[in-house]
Amino acid sequence: MKKLNKLVVAFGAAILFASGTTEMAQAYSVDNTYQLGINEGSSQRTNNRIIIAHETGTTAPAVNNAAFMKRTWNTNYAYTQYVVGDGGKVYRVGADGYVSWGAGTWGNANAPVQVELARTTNATQFKVDYAVYVNLLRDSANKFGISTDLDTGYGIVTHKWITDNVWGDHQDPYGYLASHGITKAQFAQDLKTGLPENGSGGSVTTPVKPTEPNKPATSNIPAGFTSENGTFINGDTEIMDRVGGASVYNTRGEYLKPYGTWKYDSYKRIGNLVWIHQLFFNGTQNIDVFIPVREGSYPWGTFK
Image 1 (tube, one colour):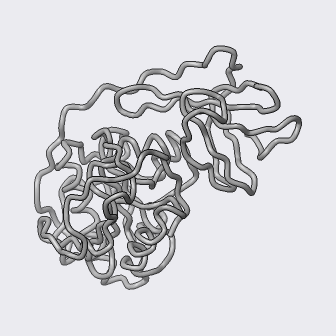
Image 2 (image 1 turned 90 degrees about the horizontal axis):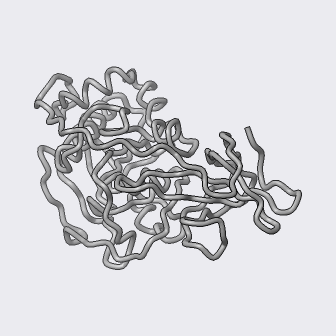
C-alpha cells in the first residue's frame, strides 16, 4: 500500500450502503465489507472534475489493501473509494462524491472517485482485474458527468498526471500496466470504449463526454512573497502545510511525507521560519497553501 497524503477536514462521511453487503454495478459486484462507517473518513463533498486512477505499488491481494485502508484510515491517512483485484473483485472503502485521501489536496478535492488497482503476477488474473478497473473508472466518470479522456486534467487522470501537473512524487499506474503489456495509448483507448470483463478485449459501450469546465485561474504570488518557481524535496520527517496563510495557527492541510516533493511559486521568511507557497484550484476557487521548509538557517530538505 502506498503512503499517500491527506486533506484534513471534519469527519463523518455520508454512508450510501450498509457495511458487509454486496451491490451490483454494471457487470461487476461491489463488496462493501471494508467501507468506512459513520464518523470515519472525510465529510467534505468533492468537485466533480476528475477521476483518479492508481495502483497499489505492492504485490498483495486487493482485499488486504482494502482491509488496511479501513483499519488505518485515521493513522496512515490514506484511502480511496475502491480497490480492484483478486480476479475482478471491487472493494469499496470511501464514499463516492466525498473527499478521499489518495492524491494530495487538489486531487482529493476534485475527485469524487479514486480507484486503486492491486498488483498481481498472474497474467490471466491481470486481464480480468484490468477490465474491471477500466470499466469502474468509466462508470464513475459517467456517473459524475466527467469525460473519459485520459490525463487531460478534466477527465480520468492518473496519479502520475497529478505529480506532473500539481504535486507529489507518485508515477502510478503506468509502470505496473506496462509490466503486463498495457501502454498509455492502449489504456486511453480502453477507457474510451470499455472492455468485456472476462479480459478478452474489445469495445462494449460508447462514452459520454460532458462540456469541459472552466480552467483554473493563473497562480498569484501572495503579498510580501518573492517569486521563485521550484521544487522542495522533503527530508526524513513529515511537514504539515497550512491553508489560507503562512502560520502554524492557520487551518491544517496535509502532511508532506518524508522525501516527498512540493512544487512552489514563491517564498518568504516569517519570524524564524521560511515558508513556500503554491496556489491550488479546488474546482470552484483558488486556495493558497503554504508549507514551512526552513527554520533559521537550517533547511528541512533540499531544493531544485
